[in-house]
Length: 462
Image (cartoon, rainbow, N blue to C red; front, top):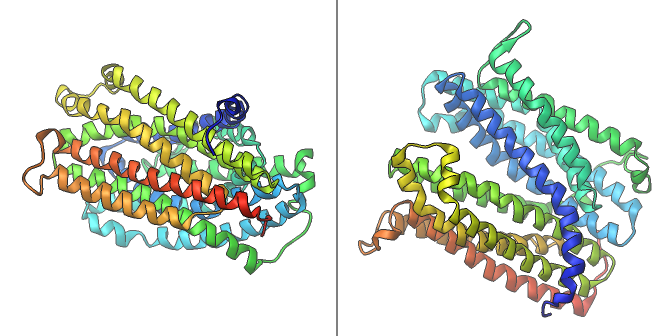
């Protein structure tokens, strides 16, 4: 199906209506990490090092687990589009069982993360603080995982604003709670970096309690009968979620680890190079929230259209989103390039770090285009309940082309790599190329999938 520009007037406002609150919520979550880093840095260097290590391990585990329960969003979205509201409640209850089981697995990994920390060979003091940080977070993992189920529900039924408001409430509580447990006050002894974890656990449970109250008391949720009855674990429904959710979780893990290893390799090039890379990567992460929010909104609208057996509309919304998201990110990338000096000055790095960071902004412009294409296509495919092939595409492109190619270029393994593509620039070039490769295959898969759905008009099966 060719993109009909006349459809953009209808599709883009619908996307922006959902993506706006999602973007605000995503930025609020990012601010949590900024507050943790900034406030812990003022406490001690050892606590900051422990925070960096522990949070990296936690995020790697957490994104994989949340990816699994995020499978509820396209499933519930299709049911919402099909007006099978009562079945949404059953899916939510089964997703909560899955979230609890995944919490137990995550708790087991985090509680025994000393084995991972031993690899770093840091001082006993840093090791102990990092271990305590993860042990504390175990207490909030069940609340956080069940909250992800409710987030997926709200995305599926086009109510992301509720979650954004709850996230902003948590953000407002984050600073005073961080201050209380990091530095100490009112008779409470300061804990340093692990105090961030205490604040996070409290906010996780606060988020869950507020959202549960909204869901139970709100009239909008009555047709779903979310907690009208008790449901035992249903192996079939949980199995459906796992078949979709596990590839999504692994895809998230591939994305996180590819960038983590990219940073570890760049660290070999020197402190200034790594610092320049981290600044540009941080700016790129903030920009990435735009295509991510638009893609989540797209998944919601596409899954609802599929559930309503409006296959042509589902495909058209997908292509409208690909066009709009890529265009927006291209403009944002070029803007970041033109204002690269001003953006760098916000971080106030040393002059030698600026020299390493400036060339990387060129990749920001191209990177955003490829990133927008691939993330849009990936979330559209999830709306069609397709995640296994995208996972393989990510593994081959991000690990193979991105990390493998970056290593070859960055360290000039062949001996004939142009100087402009050596060092950190080589890693960024290969990573951009890997996203382009992923985008080509994912968009092709979307096109083939949409054609197949048009022919078969499959019913919503759970």
